[in-house]
Amino acid sequence: METILFAALAIVAILSALLVITTPAPIVSALYMVVTLFCLAGFYVLLAAPFVAAIQVIVYAGAILVLVLFVIMLLNLRKIEEKLAITWQVAGIVVATLVLAASFIAIMSNSGTLPSKPDVEHFGKVADVGNLLFTKYLYAFEVVSVLLLLAVVGAVAMIRKPDSGEPNAD
Amino acid sequence: MQIELSHYLLLSATLFAIGVMGVLTRKNLIVIFMSVELMLNAVNLTFVAIARYTLDLAGQVMVFFVLCVAAAEVAVGLAIIIALWRHRGTMNIDSVRLLKW
Image 1 (cartoon, rainbow over the protein chains, first blue to last red):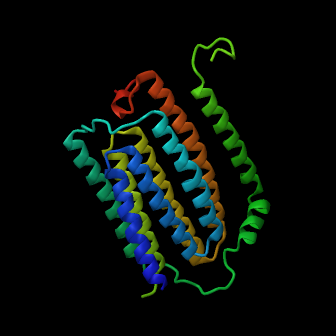
Image 2 (image 1 turned 180 degrees about the vertical axis):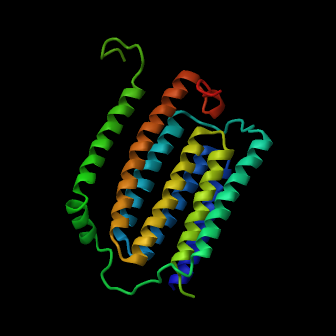
Image 3 (image 1 turned 180 degrees about the horizontal axis):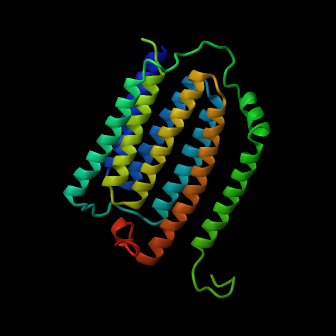
């Protein structure tokens, strides 16, 4: 059962990821990205990580992709002239293949030393993750909250219309 | 057939390579942006898989932090894209070449 789920999710995830980078229209790319993110949430459920699966769906598919779709629609983006020179396209594919080959070789040559799946009950409970987050990693948690605040302030400062002297200019 | 850790790592490497290919072969800024997200997600899958196979919850906590940084990155990145659109009226990566040699 787990094997079938893994195979199905993997096929859908890889196909939709390929479609994300090959479709000419950005809005279609964004919608295929949602499919990929949901497949990854499925993997997280298989890997006993319900908390990560939930925030994947809520934050990634729910918030980040909606933001991307909002920007695409706000700017009324259509497909643009994609005239990247064919040599650069081939170079990009070659580099990506090299990355893929290097990681495949690294993984396959070490696959004997990788740990096999331990059978345990109650691994990855949300309560345990929260416990770790608020005790051992509390400092990092607070730093991340400051980072998010900075990002929001930075985004607003950048979007603000330039040269509007009064605050009520528009 | 049992699903081993190497299967998850191979899948994650494939998704990462797809993201690299998207960054290198596309010209639309938004699509490049989503390819970067794809690479972040591939790394997240690695974290969660290793967390499950070594029974260490720290991997899941790390994914939480990666997600927070990704959210901040998306907010700032999309703000840059909108500012660029206002100034140049294009989404083509070739129009941003002020610092290019």
